[in-house]
Image (cartoon, rainbow over all chains, first blue to last red; front, side, top):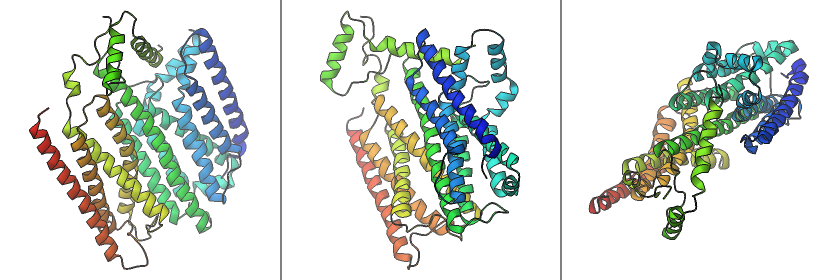
Length: 297
Length: 163
């Protein structure tokens, strides 16, 4: 199964999105907003992963190559795109007016809230995957290129939905606690691993892949899925670490150097001297920047 | 003085938390043991099989859950550990004992539940598996015993100089 007729427009859309993102981030920086460079890099990497999965050469036998493409277009790419907070960027860029209001209305609509409820997003993403591999859908997609292309598009969008629902970096409707998001990630990862292991012995119905191809593809799917899961888990862990750090002692940063008494003495003396300590305002401003970023309304 | 002394006024933040240290390091120990199992026995030695055809549906699901939980536990464990260090709440003795207890508990769980009860996979194929099973489970027990000894030592040390 390949992306077929949607490959070219999707590739174009990805390249366009990367250019728009880079230009938008540059405009924010010129204006004086803080927008870390790493987000530009992450977004570009996400676009590159999706484009590579859609059109680039992927080594391996047919099923292994498909697993590789799926990993790039539907998992790694969307996860990177979601982490770059595209919605936040667009909302910061758009001037007050109809387009911005419309986008906010969509982002805060009950439908978006439901779709971005982590278990629902996981069901949409993993459910589509199970249907594709465990029903006649695969064989049908092979016969009808347009269906195959639409399925590819669905996998990309569902992957994006899942990553956004789990990471919750963009300002969307509804707050969702870390435990639910972590448990959803666990369940989705387990479902992915089980599906990969079941493909190791039995390919999708109505297909005839070589056994060695099937095994290599299933293992790629299994371990590739692990890599994306660890990436998403790291995003959640960093969020938790930052949140507990700020919450525990509001207003004051964690003293970074405390173990070495000599260093400690030096930092305390510099804090007591008339020179204003440089660490505190920087940390506070970053917090406020993040706060404004998550609620631009 | 414009800012407060970073060390003053937070005695609670500096008190070691033995229970939390033990638990967090047990999570890390179990996850590291699982990663070692995956890397050494699955990938390097190819003793375990990726999929054993006798695996049942329940075993497959439990294996998938456990595998994903290991990955998440590895990430979560190291961040929780970093948080303990950041607050200087780490109790080293309890932490070490937790690491051994976690690793041993995972080893024994894998040896008994995965290999024998659910039969997800065996230690090695094509040979008499009994000595391998004994070695596997005894190694797990040894880790548990080390963890227990370390825990009792840490408790005694904690009792001598209460924090």
